[in-house]
Structure formats: C-alpha cells, structure tokens
Length: 409
Length: 230
Ligand SMILES: Nc1ncnc2c1ncn2[C@@H]1O[C@H](COP(=O)(O)OP(=O)(O)OP(=O)(O)O)[C@@H](O)[C@H]1O
Ligand SMILES: [Mg+2]
Image (tube, rainbow over all chains, first blue to last red; front, side, top):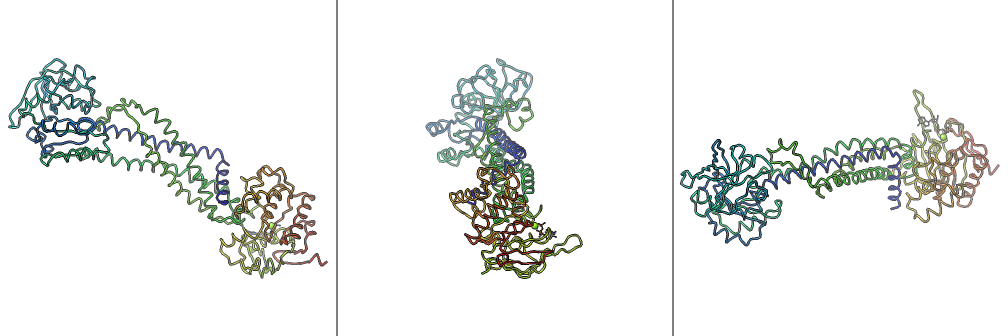
C-alpha cells in the first residue's frame, strides 16, 4: 500500500509535468471519445427511429396472417378467424393497441392517372395508435368510422394522380373468386407521412366498406398487435400465439422485416467497430506521448531502479499515469457528449439531406439517442485498449539499466 | 564478518578501439563499521568500484560479497532488494526525483521499503534538520541549490539507517563548512550505529575523517592506509 501510494503520487505529478502536452492529449482523447459517443448516439437515434417509424406504426410488433398471405397478399388468403371472434379474443388483452384490417393490392384511378397502391380497410378507432399520421393533421378529414364511404390517400399520391379533396377516384381489386371488385370513392382527406414513398403507397377506406366491396362478409387479411417496446415483443407474441391455432401464422416484426431485424443486431457491432477505429487513431497520440515521457525520464527511472525499486513498480507507475490520462480524457469526452447530445434530443432538422436518405426509411428529423450502455462501452474500450497500448512503453521503461542513468554526467 | 569483500575484480570498458581497465584485479576487504575513503584521480575507477559493491554493475570477473553474501551472481530482482534494504546510496551524477519534494525524496526509499508514514515523517524531518535543510522540506529539487540537493541525497542515503553507505563525491557541491558538518554527521552515524561508510572523493578534507584511505590509479589499488593506526 505504501508502494502504491508513491506510485500514484509519482504518476499524478509526472502527468502534470508537461502541462501543455497533457492538456493537448486530454483534448484529443476528449474529442475522440466525444466523437465515439456522439456518432453512436446519432446512429442509434437514426436506427431507432427507422424501426419505430416503420414498425411502431402500420405493421405493429406482431402480425397475424393466413399462412399463404406472405406469398400472395390477396383477399383469397384471409384470416380464418372472423372479425367478431377476433374481437372476443383480444378486446380485453393487454396490448398497447391492436387492429384487424383488410389489406390487399389495388389500383387507384383518377380521371388522369392510375397507380398501384396498397388498399387498407381499417376501423379508424382501432387504428388510431398504430397510425403513422395524426388523424387531426389529415388535410380534409380522416375516416370517421369503419363504414365511412370516403377514401383518404397520401398527399404525394394525390399530386401524382392530379386529383384533390372532393374529387372522385375509382378503386379496383379482386374478390375471392378472382372477379373484379371495383367502386368509386370521393377523396375526403389527404395524409402526410415522413417519407414520400409512404404517401404514395397506402390508400385508406373503412373496413366494412372494404369488406362489402370485396364481398368477404366480416373477414380480414391482417391483424396487427402493438406492445410497449419493439425491443421486447415476446410477451405480445406469446399472448397472441396462445390465443390462436395454426390456421393462422403469427410473426414478430423482425421475422417479417428481416432487414430491419438484422440492422438492429448489426448496430451493436457497428458501435464497437466505430469506437475501436477512433481509438486506434487516438492510440498513436497516446503511445507517442508515453514514449516521449518515458524517454525524457530515463535518468529518474534509472535512479528509482538503482535505489531498489522493482521494475514491476516502474511498469505500474507508467501504466497508472496512462490510466490517469485516459480517465481524465474520458471524463472530458463523456461530459462533452452529454452536453452536446442532451440539447439535441428534441431533434435535429436534417431535411436538407433527408431527401436522399428516404429510400432507407429515414425521416427529416433526427433524434440522437444517448444510451448509458454506449458511454460505458466507449469508456471501457478506451480504458482496456489504452492499457494494452501503454504496456509497451511502460515495459521499455522498466527495462532501463540503472547504472547508465546515474553515471552519465 | 566483513561488510564488503572484493576478490580480483576486473572491469574493462571499450572506448573506440581502446580497452580501458576501469577495475584491474581489485581485492579489498572492508570491515563492519569501517569508515573508508576511496581516493583516485578522475577516471581512476572509484565509481566503477562503488557500483560493483552496490550491485548496480556486474564486474567482468572476480567476486563481490556484501554482509557475507556473494552478490555478483544474484538476479536483478535480488540485487534490487539488496540495494533497497541494505545499502544507502549517494550517487555522483544524479540523485533526486524531480517531481518529489525534499522530504518526499528522503522518504522515497523508506516508502518503497514499506515503513509506516508516521515513522517516515519523523525520520525524514530529523535527518533534514541534521543536514541543515530545515524549512526546505517542501521544495522540489529544481528549487534548491546544488549543495542543498546534495544534502537531500545524503539525507535519503542515511535516513533508512542502512548497514552500508556508498557515497560518490558527497561533498562535491558543498562549501567547506557544510562539508565538514556532513562529515561530522557521517562520523556520528559511524560511531553510534556502526554504519559502514565507503566514500569516493577527491576532497583532501574528507579524507582526514576517514579511518582508512584507499588510493586507486587506473583501476588498481595503489595504497591502503589505516589512518587510525597512524
Ligand atoms: N559506461 C562506460 N563506458 C565506457 N567507459 C567507461 C564507462 N564508465 C566508466 N568508464 C571508464 O572507466 C574508467 C573509470 O571510470 P570511473 O567512473 O570509475 O572513474 P572515477 O574514478 O569515478 O572518475 P571521476 O572522479 O571522474 O568520477 C574511466 O576511464 C572511464 O572513462
Ligand atoms: Mg566517479
């Protein structure tokens, strides 16, 4: 303990011997650590939002379909449980939200253009919490009930079709007998979404209206369930699975969207790689600083050895000095990260660059996410790798020959 | 038992294409409680001999015994232990750790030895007072004169009460009055604690304090006088 005390003291004093160098190093480590955490928070925020945007809405966390619906998403592959029976099963269940809907491909035609869309026959009351837009922000109005006679489409689609609220369009799809099922609708509302692609994709009509148009009584093609957290969907999945038999297929979001599922997994790996890459850049400065420091102190290190201090203590002293430097740098970096990310958590407007990123579902606001686990990971990696990088200069110092140190005049 | 015994020590350095015999078949025996001065012109081999005795440097041939044990075949770790626990050093060229204060420098050896802090503090204060550095305890080496630094080094060498003190030119930077005081202190320690002193010096005045004067020239012992007998 006495020995450790003197090692701590020597390490600390030596650290401040060359103020300038230490402060520059602290700055470099601080900025490096800041960059590690800041970039990680941005990426986390982006992925988080991408996933929330794409599954927290419309698709939900768990979905139920006819087993063949994935291959052929048409009205022929209906959920075999009637809508009435579904209500009975799930009305009292402990989900954030759930909804059954008719979801089939359709063609929408205005007097000028036609486009393929995904037709959603929904019950607006049930969908409120699973919707990617706020009903109140719909231009015009959203559907008022499952038997509403109007249609709501995205703003972008309206532009493409060169139509507007109040005009009529024709929807065309197929009934279970593969006969044409079509109907005219009046546009009652236009919704906006984070991405233009979504605004082009979905057309909303009332669920009952859709069932009538497609001649399927009270059948639906898709039931979605929303739990509390997309990272923890097992409780929802189990609740749904235990309530149904194998005439339907129940899947979690990452079973359906394997790309997003994989992305979440890859994130952790990415964070680690990013942290290590920045550290490698830092390590050059760190090792260089230590090599210089050790080189400048040949004589006093030799003196300590001559007086009977063990080489292991010299090694320890240099390592402690390096750990002090890293720990201070980490404190600076973590503080900087915290101080810069917290004010940005309300969102950064990136609409200038967002257009180009829409293809992978990014929206125009970025919400950085500061996770304690990421700060700990970055700090842990820096300390561990810093320790390893310091071993070589520290080892070299402990091998000095004491005679040379004390006889050179 | 003799405190130090050297048998046929040889040490050769190569300088350019010339071989320099820093030690040339040196054999000496120093008894416990001896007060020995080692005198030689510059380059005579004083430092080389002290380093061999102190286990800092291994001679090319010959044997070195300290406190009865042979040391020239010990491992580095064992030598470090020997230096730490049994020998007090005043080096010729470089003595103090720049980031430590005078007192911390004096306490350094004791701290590495594991002496409790209260005891260290008492001993270092007493010794610093004896070498006339009272009031300068918290100065760092850079804030002291050469002579003051030298006295801190001496204080460190004797603070832990080693059985053997090896001092290389301990009075080099001191005025004659301080040098005298220091030699008085050494003499006291030698008398009261039976500490063995081996002091390398050019200084005629220092030699007068010695019980035994060994003269070297070009790595050989040329004279060995017992001054007490005389
Ligand atoms: N590391 C070394 N490399 C080469 N030659 C050395 C080395 N150390 C000592 N010598 C030589 O060995 C001889 C003895 O040196 P030493 O330092 O023992 O002399 P000294 O009596 O202590 O001299 P001084 O009074 O100047 O300190 C000298 O000729 C010196 O040049
Ligand atoms: Mg010398």
